[in-house]
Amino acid sequence: MNETPGARDHRRVRELLGREPRGAYEIVVRDDDGDPVVLRNAPLLDDGTPMPTRYWLIGADEARRIGQLEAAGGVDRAEAAVDPAELADAHDRYAAERDADLPADHTGPRPTGGVGGTRVGVKCLHAHWAWHLAGGDDPIGRWIEDRLADAATPAPVAADPTITLHGRRTTVQFDDARFEFPWGPDNLTERWLDDHDPPRPDELTNALGIVTDHLDDLIRIHPGVVDVREWALDGAGIGALASLEIGATVSGRDHELDRPTAEEVFRLVATEPARDRAHNPGLPSDAVETIVATCCIVQATMRRLHLDRVTLRVPADAG
Image 1 (tube, rainbow, N blue to C red):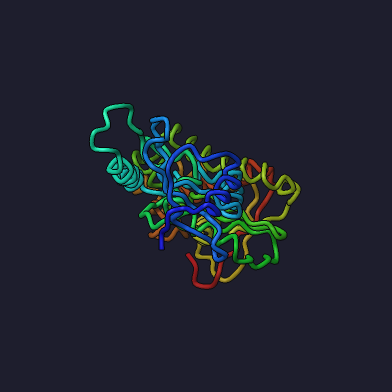
Image 2: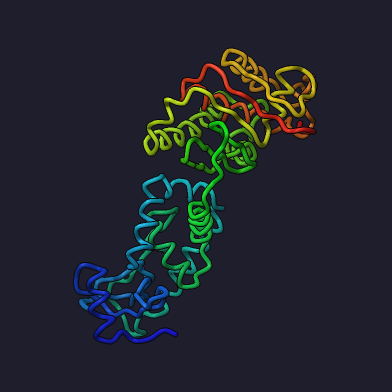
C-alpha cells in the first residue's frame, strides 16, 4: 500500500538520492525489505520548476542493473525493438497522468515530454523501468524485464562459440559471455530491405551497418570476442543459406562456409529480384524474402570479426 513518507523514509530517500529531495513525492515501490525503489514525483518542484519525470528509480540494486543494461547499448537496442507508435502512445499516457496532477490554477511553466521528459524515442531506461515497476503500461519496461530475466538465467555454455539467428533478434555466445542485439532476418527485412526489389545499394549498406554497429557494441563490452576464430551459426535462415550455397537441401549436418563463397552468395541474392531468387536450387520458398537479410547478418559478422570461415549448423529437416 502506498504511504506518505515518514521521517525514516525521508532520510532513506535522501541517502539514495545523495541530496535533499526538491519536491513532494510518494514512495510507490519498495523492495522485499521495505527499502524505497521508486518515487512518484509531483509535477512541480517546491520552487515551481517543472518536474517531467513522474516516476524516479532510486533503488540502488535496480539502478545498478539498469545502468549495466544501458552500458551494453540498451537504450538503442530497446528503441529499435519496440513499435514506434506504441512507444509514442506510452509517452502520451505518461504525460497525461503527470499533467493531471498539476494544480487547476497553475499558469506557470509546465512539464513537457513523456517518460523522463522525452518527446520521441528513448532517452533513459531508468525512467521507463521505474514506471513499469509502478504498474505503468510501458513497452520499454516490458523489454527491460525480458532482458533482465535473460541476464538472471544462466545461459548454457555452448560447445562452440555460437551465433544464433532468431526472427527478430540475434544472440552471440562464447565462453561464459552472452550478447544479444535486436535484429534478425525478419525485422531486418522489414526495416531496410522490403521497399525495393531487389534492395538498393544504400538499403543493403544500412542493413549491414546496423548489424555492424551492434557487433561494435559487442567488441566494446567483450574485447576478447575478436580473438575467437571458430564460430558456429545456427537458427533462422541458416539452413536455407547452407542449402542455397550447395544447391540442394541440407539437413542434419554442419556445413563449412568460407568468406569468398559467402560474399558470392550475398552478391547473388542481393542483386536478384525475388521472382528470380526463388528459382535458385536449394533455396526454400519460405526463405526467398528473408535470405538477403540472413546473408547481411552473416556477411557483417564475418567482416567485422575478420573470420575466414564459419560453420553453418543445420538441424534435421531444416530448410
